[in-house]
Each structure stands twice: as C-alpha cells, then as structure tokens.
Length: 489
Image (tube, rainbow, N blue to C red; front, side, top):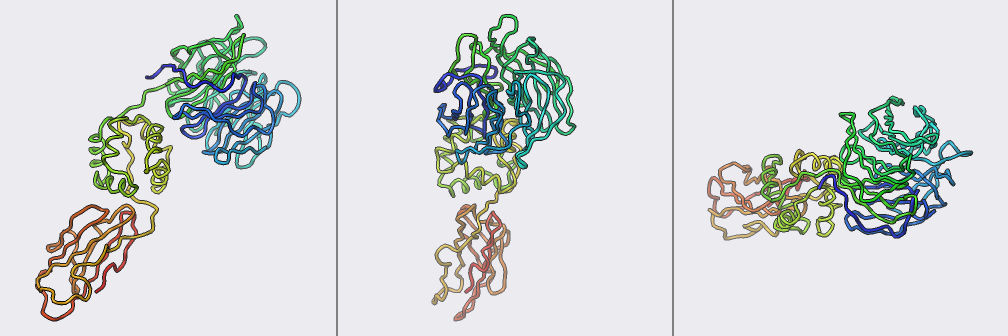
C-alpha cells in the first residue's frame, strides 16, 4: 500500500555514514561507512543480503555512491579517502578510477551523489559549494557551476532526464530547508520550493517520478528525526508523508524498482542501526485475470492470444501456466514479473531478449507497466525474434515424392512446422503444376497453430492418369525467416 513503511531483513551489521545505491530493478548495495571497505548486496525479491567483493580501500565516513548504466556503480569522496572506486555487478569486481578534483584539505565527504542520463554523475565537496561532473565514458571529472550556497548532508535525487536536486542540509551550524535544482544541459542552478523541515544528513531518492527526503538530524535538539517528505517536480511542492518507524540520520535512501525505497541502517545520537526499512511510495496499477490480457492482445497485437500461446510453448511454458500465474499473483510491476519468470523455463532473460529484438528496452517496458492498467498496455510491436531458422516440412508431404497408384482426385497435404515463433500463414503458398494456391483461395485450407500448420490443397481439376505432378511450396516464419523451396517434387 502506498505511503507505508515495512521492516525488512536487517543488515548483517549495524552501520552508518555509508554509501548506498542500486543497479537494475532488484539489487541494492551498501558500501563503506562504519564497516570501512565492506560491500553488501540486497535482493529485493529475496529479501536477503549477500557479501560481495570488498572495496580496494576504506571509505569510512560519508562517501557518495551512484550507479551509471546497467552494470556499474561508483563510490567516491569519503572523509578519509577521496578516491573513486567502480564496482561491476556482473564481475563482482572493483577498479580504481579517476578521483574527484578535491584531493587535499578539509572535509571531503560527498553527499547527494546523483546520476543524470547514461554517462554523467555529480559530486560536491560537502560544506562548500564546488561542484563537479564525472564522465563514465571518459573516466574524467569536469568542474561545473558552483551550487548557490555551501551545504553538507543534503538529500539528493534525480528527476527527469536533465535535472537533479539537493535538498536541506547544514552550513555553519545551521540546518536549512533549501532545495536547489541543477540542470545538466544548462549547467545552471535554480532555487525551488523549500522542504518543510530543516535538517541535515538525511536520505534522498527518486521513486515513481517523485523525490523523497527522509530522516535526518534535527538542529536544535541534536537528535535524529523520522520525517518523510515528497517533492513533486511538476507542481514544485512538498507534501508530508508517513513518518519512518524510527528516527535515523547518516544513511542512504536507496530506490529499488519502480515503487519502493529503503533506509539501510543509520544512526541516532546514541547508536548505529542494522534495521532495513522499506517505504512504498506508490501503488502500481494491476490486472487480475487472463481475460484482461486476452482482450488487450486481441485489440493491440495483431497476433492475439493464439500467437502468445505458440510463443510460450516454444519456451516450454503453456498458456495455462501463464493463466495460473496471472490469477495467483496479479502482477503489479516489472519486478513481480521478473520474480515469477525466474522460477519458470521462460525466464526474465528471454523477455529481455524478446524486447530488445523490437528495440523495446526493459526501461520502456517498465514505463508501460507503471503507467498502465495492464502490464502490456501501449506496448505495440510485432512478434519477431532473433532466431535465424525458417519453417520446414515436417516428415513428408502427402502423397509422398515418387509415390505411384495415387487416385487422380487426391488432395495434397503439407505439414509446416517452425521451431521459433511460428509459421506466418499469410506467407504460405503452394504451387501445383504451375497453379499457385494461398490463403483465401478456393482449394487452399489449413488447420493448427503457428507452431505447426497442416495445409491442404484441393486442386481445381483432377490429375491425368500416369504422369508426375510438380509441386513447390514456400513459407516464412513470424520472425521473417524464409524457408525457400520447402517442397519440390
């Protein structure tokens, strides 16, 4: 349910002043802090923690962390270590990259680290206003326009494809409610609506198109707070949401998937914590039954439910299996779909490959899910695949090549099969003694599914006695692969 907090599997150890970010739609990471070089992975779907390769060096106090692309995250700029460490999720390995431009003197903690686009991340020397941009492709830092005012302990979140925000924070012993927006394209800052409560060392994240700021340290009482606030970019306004279950500061607020973010650990004036608090920011729209999907497929996809059935069967999964999963689970998001597919032969990677075959990325698919009442709404693409094998004749045609003693009024039968996404019946033609028959012609009939069609030709005239008959046939599959000259006899 939206605007609710839930307690999840605790961290393996208490920690604070650590970095946190996510890669993909299921995995979150925490790095450094009071556990120095330790790096751990959290699985949202499994609600489980796994120890991963340690960082090359200690990042013991307040490093920033953000991910770029689908495989890499970066941890940079701790108080004790201004290095920049790159982690590869696929390789579970670290590499040392070019460090940020402030290599000497003073407080070097990076807060509110954010990524904008597919290549650029940002960092700031906390407590001051110098601001720099990191290029993943160039492994280089470039100085950018200074932040309007010096701050430390801000909440950072990215909204849209061009802007990120640094909200609240502390300077000169005073906490602030300020909210600054940075435009990547313009290399410029602007002042936006102020956050409701002044605080510092709070968590920031973007979830379902909104910015969130949670927790932090209260200035007057020097205690942690549990306030949650939501920023709406379109209305330039803040709304107070449900409080966290406990007061916390010095933690990362990590978004995983489309609807949830997490408070991993944290601190109050008395102790560090190992708690894992999950916040559901928005309720996804759902569908509950196969009939909903059938209606959509019939309306939006030219192939309809029968072709979906054939596609599933090609991966060893039946339409009945899908119906059972839909009715039992009522998928709410791409993360739920991923979890379900991972337990079946038709896996998440198959879905990913299928989408990429139409230049339809997983992120686009996620958007379709998040903004629609049906999982597949507005996903309009042809059913094609990367397979390269065309259709073929299964066994022999009837009558078989060279067969004699065949009655002159015998029909000709072909069984066409395709092991990929199925035969495209609209492409099939059979030529008998130079006369071509295809779908819609008198004398051409078929039965079956795209996986295997039985095509029957009833020639317009009976054959002559004691002579051979020349037959040619053609078919392509739904991926566009031809099976040229399938039959010549």
